[in-house]
Image 1 (cartoon, rainbow, N blue to C red):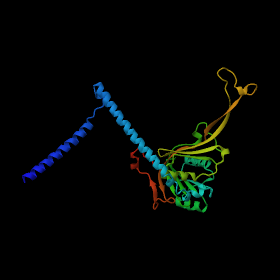
Image 2 (cartoon, rainbow, N blue to C red; image 1 turned 90 degrees about the horizontal axis):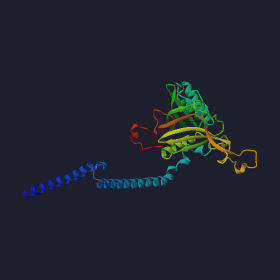
Image 3 (tube, rainbow, N blue to C red; image 1 turned 90 degrees about the vertical axis):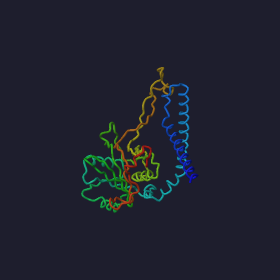
Image 4 (spheres, one colour; image 1 turned 30 degrees about the vertical axis):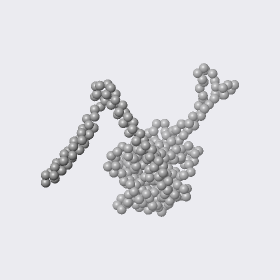
Length: 327
């Protein structure tokens, strides 16, 4: 009995000693003073140098982790694009089918929503607008399938302001729901240009994840895959921090006279000629509209609020980190 008590006592003493050492380490971590609080100059500089070395080591570790993640992403790149040839958008993107888009509104639309639709028609070739009336969106989907439309764009309006966008790929989906914000119509853009009927060039930036690839191909399937470069039209969807910024431009070539050099002499090419030398300058002119999209959900199949199965849904708890992005 006496030996067992001694063993218990020794074990308890060891446990207390370990706890004290752990507590001491925690106290030392907590009680680590900042270099600015140390009065001795030599000690202050030594502590500062130590902290600097620790930060440098931490940065190297983070850089190695980023490089490893980048290499892994490159290795997975083939897997990311493996199913593109057989997905819902391949028929349009492989030029097998010409895009034909039906644009409609919600049941209670506004004049601003109708103006936005008119400008969307000028952006997307072969787009047609239909009055919604009292028809359910499912019936419109069935009608669009019979008329060989390849997609539906539904503009949702709240308090007379367009605030949502549904893109429904036909005939089998998917359906993407976007929040629409920061809408600026063409008439409100200073020095705006007027677009022509030429097929535009399409620019998609930073759609790098699997979900981003799906959304990028959905947007791409709205436009013809053979742009008419003579029209000098460019449509851009730029993804930044899961916000998709839309811009519509035309590029212009201006011929301007070259200025004389600092000594007041004409350039060598212009010597002996009466005509001034000219240079060509390229610039962009915005045509509008201008707006921002944020993905709310991506649903399998066509629009179905009750029995639809979602591929991805945005939830508030997903926004806990500013460095986590989905597109």
